[in-house]
Image 1 (spheres, rainbow, N blue to C red):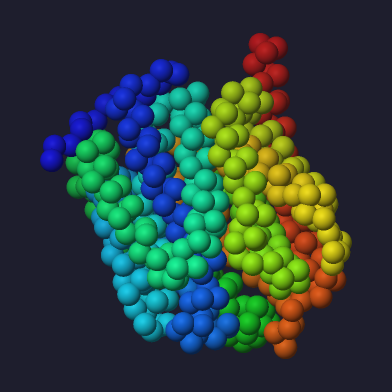
Image 2: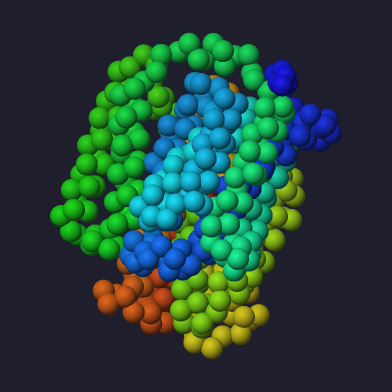
Amino acid sequence: MTTTTASPHISGDRWDARAWWLLIVLCGVVLLDGLDISMVGVALPSIGRDLDISTSSLQWVVSGYVLGYGGLLLLGGRAADLLGRRRVLLIGLVAFAAASLVGGLVDDGTLLVASRFLKGASAAFTAPAALSIITTTFAEGHARNKALGIFTACGASGYSLGLVLGGLLTEVGWRWAFIVPVPIALALFAAARRFVPTPPEQAQQAKVGYDIGGAVTVTGSMLLLVATIVEAPKVGWDSPRTLLSFIGVALLLSAFVTIENRVKHPLVRLGILRSSSLVRANLAAMAVVGSYFGFQFIVTIYLQSVLGWSPLDTALALLPAGVFVAFGAPRMAPLIERFGTGTAIAASLVAFLAGYVLFFGVGAAPSYWFAILPTVLLAGVGFAIGFPALNIQATSGVADSEQGLASGLVNTSFQVGGAIVTAVVSAAITSGDGAVPELSALDNGVVVIIVAASLGLVTALAGSVAWWRARLALATD
């Protein structure tokens, strides 16, 4: 099959069929990622019963994916820059389909976790490749902002759809939650071969030497960091194992920085971190996703363990947030362009904070419509405004040759932030006897996510102030 040839940046409001088909394929990739994560999460109790996996080990069905995804994102993002974004996307989709099929067929818990790690590793290459293809195809400004808004909405839609679909498929059999993504990934592979172009400059980039030492040290540090954070609530934050693991992370990162400062063609050009807007976007990304993942962890335990709701009821309770993002995110571009990304990110964190504060002290017999739904809707508002703005700010002003790196950085921040805050929340609400947490313990978890969102708000406000100062300075010149 012939592939499309590269074209200059797409700009303006009116896009041709080629541009729309490209965007549809890339949105399908992020929709598949969200779909897979939430479908498997709903199926966990059934998986545990069928494969005789203990509750403590069952978490690794989710954590294995997070480990592969968060640990390899920087490598995946830079690989897209150096090896070719289209090539990395295609290989990642095939690997994703293969890992999904294996996960649906195995009868051993260890093999299931291994398949989840491989699937997360595959997504660590497809996600930054898809995002960087958008940022290098659509011109910076209105066209890119509009494309990223649609891209964000599809990710949220996939996650929301997966919650409901996972509940329905689990009623038939949990293996379907693994098998259904296989034909979707293969269909996306076929579509990507036709509609994703190969930029000619990547033939030159492929001749650049590879930084093996940097790849090994940064990947090792990210894998060890995510694994340590996931395990810390169980083994203890002050245990020798946790402390030694954090020391190992620091040593690997130190070795990585040393290597990157010396090699001719570094895996990660450290100078990219001199961009204050990029750094603020990544810090805010950690706060946004970390606080929301922590909230979702709390509300899932609250609804199912305290109130006795079914997984499907829980999914439907959270669905309005995803619906709001699906309809709201694609329409955020004009707002972001008018008020700046920093202001938009700050507004999103205000919405998150308001929702978390409302949820504090929710009680044992709440009304869904008045006690839970407002927080869910405010979270939807936060995501609809914040996610496009975060992706825009994290990739703006970055050269095309480093868009994969910038995309990998912001996706890593999403994953590491989610892992850190969820781990702290887990430690705050659970006790050693494994009993259902008391409402007061759940409130402790809500305090953690309020603090996380507040720290993100401070970071976002700094960016907003800088943007408005620059805007005023231009107006007065």
